[in-house]
Image (cartoon, rainbow, N blue to C red; front, side):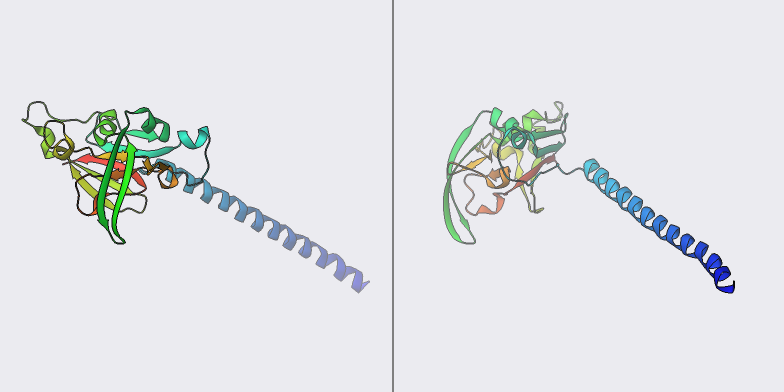
Length: 202
């Protein structure tokens, strides 16, 4: 009888422990799901473009955002590969020095001027040559940055054919991301690869 009574007293304890373990596992799963959801929302609300690094062609790849244009503009825009391809195409052949020696390449893509005009720069018409006070900072996916002054590519001034290149020597640029090309530079320091952002500012 004593053994039976002991068995009856112990059984509820094991049952309670089992329920506690199940509840703990369930709570952990809910916490993980909430954390993942928060992380996704945080990424979606950040200023950086939503860059999908998966390789491959197809319509979806061409429509993904590859370049953010913002700063002193009327419309903050996110451009896809299709958007860039729809702009007038220019071709330049350039030679520049790099860490591996002298390079010569032929690039195609829209002019930086045409890309920025999609976002409609906010220059002050009451200030003489206000655009000459502005620069464009180009940012790569590795956060490398370089700056080009507006006057360098303005048609009324230096009128340099600065490109947002989408091909190099007839092949698409890496990861489907553009490259800034600055003809006339002796060194390639401003040839920002894997371009993800163009910011117009003073």
